Every structure is written in C-alpha cells, then in structure tokens.
Image (cartoon, rainbow, N blue to C red):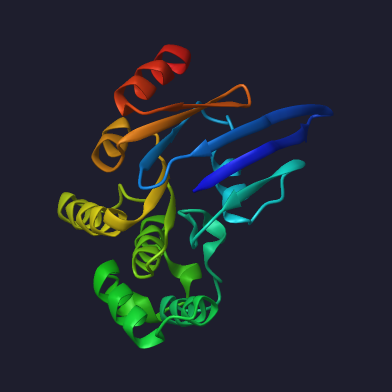
Length: 217
C-alpha cells in the first residue's frame, strides 16, 4: 500500500515557482504494476524519488507498508569510484541480504563480464542500467520503483529482464516510468497520470495511455 497525504512539491525555475505535485491525496492499490505517465518535466521522476524517500516533499507525506526499492535507473544510484561488485556488496549490507548470493545474481544477470570489477564511472549509461536493474531484481522488495531502465540492450536481454520482473511482481507491486508505451504495455497492468500536479488512477492501462496521448500526444 502507498498512500499520498497532502503531498506537494515545487521548484523555483528562473525566478518563478513551478508546482509539479499539487496536494495529492490518493491511495494506490496493492499487487499492481502501475505505469506512471506524464509529459516530459511533469514530475514523474520527482514523484518516484519522494516515494522512495530520496527527496523530501514540501508538504504532506507518503505512507507505505513493506519494503521499497530505490528508483532504479536514476544516475545517483551508484558510487562512481567503486566497482560494480563493490557497489553490490555495499547495497547488500544496507538492505541486510546475503552479499555473495546478491553478487552472484547481479554478475550473471547484468552480463557485464570483466567490466563488473571496474569502477562504475567507466560504465556507459546502458551498463549502469543493466547493473541497476539487476541489483534491484536481486533483492525481494514489496514495491519496485523503475525509472526508464528495462529497455536496455538487445531483444534477448530485454526478454530476460521482462521475465525476471514479472516473476518478482507476482508477489509485489511496481511503479514504472518509461517514455516507451510498448515497454509499459509489457510490464504494467494499470496506470497513473501526472498532469498539472494532479494524479489520476486508471484501473485500465489502455485508458491511461489514451488519456495521456490526448493531453500530451
């Protein structure tokens, strides 16, 4: 369960206040893979960061039960000076999971080869995404937050990512941001639309996509 209580967030841009989240009051259902839709700059990644606890809101709060992943796909996930393996070991300690099991899973899943033992600062964006997605899928969370990271690599890797993700969310929830409607259709079964600071929930993903395209297509 994720509940927004009077949640607001704004930024000052060129001397003017820009509200991206405007007094949200909503409870998201459990056991759903939810697509978070909205135009560029609508505040989707900001909302994910607030849900994860990585960014404070201006007002209100997010209430949730269970464990929550970090926003997979955001650039700040990893320490750039540490290797992929060292980052994985650090996360394992933070979340209290077996480091060797997690290391084995991420190494195999990400398919980074020798680069896994090199500093993350040497990784391409695609390699970081593979590492981040593998690391997130290697830990069993109650809710997964995914930000533009599953469409990475070739078709075979994408199929593998989808299979692992669908296995994880059999007993969990997810919120996913992607500009690729095809990706959202592959991974999600319902949607929320962020528009002008307001959030609308759609039980039917296709209805959410249609409304998003009407407003922003």
